[in-house]
Image (cartoon, rainbow, N blue to C red; front, side):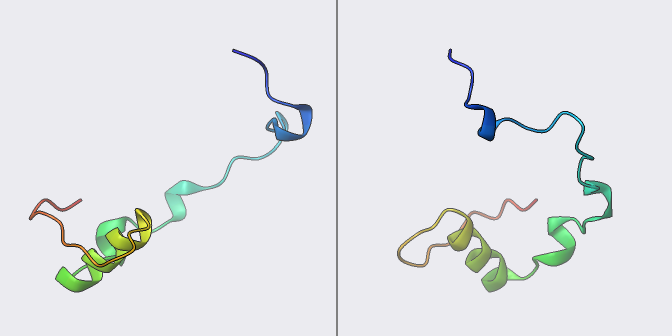
Length: 56
């Protein structure tokens, strides 16, 4: 596998993002329609779809 171009490589001295400060998806996305709309947006569906009863 080839190495990525220099401009595409991460800065080794950069500070990583503080992911612990983010709200969990379960706190932000709740309810049937909101959950389904979020799913549609994430997977970029052209038409609305529903998911199974499995939640995060």
